[in-house]
Image (cartoon, rainbow, N blue to C red; front, top):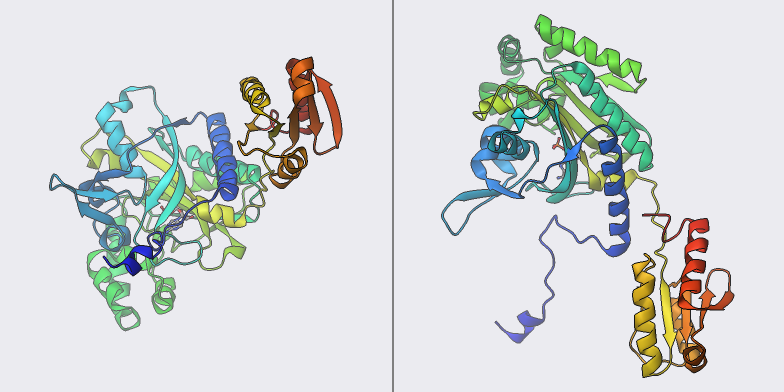
Length: 431
Ligand code: AMP
């Protein structure tokens, strides 16, 4: 390698990005809210690996879905196995349930998770190749009330993270009993409209016409709007389920609209599908989506256990969230000389034991330089330890927000910090 090449900066992979500390603070707040809200509804965290056997998604997500055919990060590992960076989370949870026989636990099972997903999609605003989802899944509950409760929970979460103007698009995609008749009607309509479809959709018309609804091309979308509606083909059971689902959305007074072309990009959905959209997000306006998948566990060779769930995209959520991260509160130590430095180290250890964040720097500084440094890095408190303080055992504490100064033992000073911070909902009140 030439020295010039050596000097070239290495950028992240296209469609992947760093989340720097200031933004990461917002992520922490959003993730903490998700945990708090989901646990209020009885959900527990289930963490699965990021890397899975490719077959898991081929069988779970669906061999003809865009995700599997075009967007997976798949490679062969050193043992010659085909592995894939997960493009979505649901198949992993299903695998874990079967593996650990979680179906033997009292049903329904409620799980949540937050982490990165990978799709080799065309990057743009709100669309990345590594993105993050918050995912919730319920297993073993047929009742449509749970589908509505998941959406109600999402709204509560949106409120907590200051996301407004979300509406819900809903549909039912039926079940294996009613879908063949619909598939037939759709195939006929698609064949008739063939000259208005892109070549990809012409192919889909043959193998899986439902997937034409996923196409982003305007001419295909226009043709799809004239196709028969699945809601006109639902069997009695699916029609009742859909009606009940809508009645619970009404009960919660959630804003929804029936969208007959909403089939979602995955093959496994049955009955309920929904998408959570925000008007001012432009083309990528879905911040979440989900639905019911009553046959996936069985199709994976597991028990007959129905499922329903929701995934929320964190990048898109943060694009519309009005959350603001408060600047971190912490104490800075100003000291002079080795003995005072040691006293500072021990004092900071005591402060931290009580939950008060501290920063100690090791550059020798004049008192003036210490104070300007404390201001520059945004310290909330400055603890001052010089010769006088060392000999008296009483240190000084400066409240940088109120420009007040206190003197006292380390115990007295930490009490002042704790009381003041509680009053300001700072270091100790936040969490
Ligand atoms: P899906 O798993 O496709 O139903 O997506 C659920 C949510 O994840 C979407 O509503 C988006 O908010 C988010 N999402 C999906 N794909 C991406 C992506 N490539 N980049 C960013 N967010 C995404």
